[in-house]
Length: 340
Ligand code: GLY
Image (cartoon, rainbow, N blue to C red; front, side, top):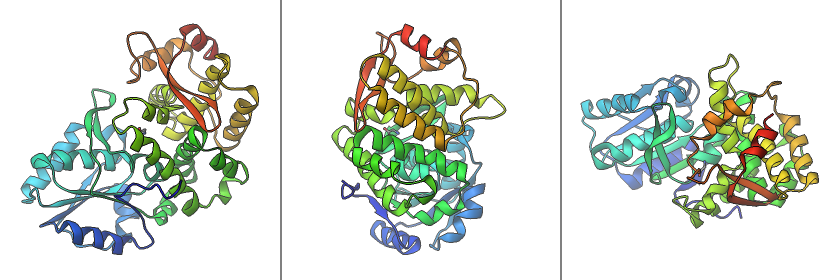
């Protein structure tokens, strides 16, 4: 499966050489690099390419807005950038999604290259062409589907991350294994987090996501399985955003996978053995909050989930390791019971 990498994606051994090659194909008249204060410090020094402009924005999900896009569009406009120019997005999911959105809409579209620098963005946002920004507190509410001209992944950027951030990205690798690959799950089970070989695991994880996205690029059906763990995960992430100890995305998703597996077991879809094996594995890696919010609190956030319809709350649930079903209608009483 690891051969099924998207055509626009390169797993790089030499980031500057691969960027230079991509640039020689695009032949831009000008190049801007989009960074935040973290990638300016830790990642920009690792790349050496010609550029006419550096656009620096503040890091964080709260900056993923149309206001920040205004700053990017203003810089591009003032700098004389054209539809033949190039934007290189150097950073995590926010930079990639928002920089891609800003480029795809600037003068109706200029080329862009994403260089994802976090594990989370390397195995998730880098594939599948979802671009956009948050709007009025709603995640990724404004956006479009469009693949970047190039995505270049280099694992040396991972050395700049804390263990907590690395583990957050790892949750998406676990998710990909659980929804589509018993083999990859067995690999994860067979070693400790510390001994994971990123060069081996990242291409496999990307290939799993790529297979799903190829089959359903616009998320009409199958692609929804990538939301396993995310329905409750997003609600938890939003809930803890306001607390003193916010959860990282992957931590919320890991907890979401545990709780959604409880639902799947209750609905007779997942057996107890698999549920317990996954729970034990995740609890060994992640630190979860001792007290969880109750149903009433989480329901407020769950109702915003994009997968829902008039009939109620829809989940992507595991049937067994390697097999996930989407659009499962879950009764409120089960949710209340699980989240009690
Ligand atoms: N992150 C889920 C997706 O790309 O569909």
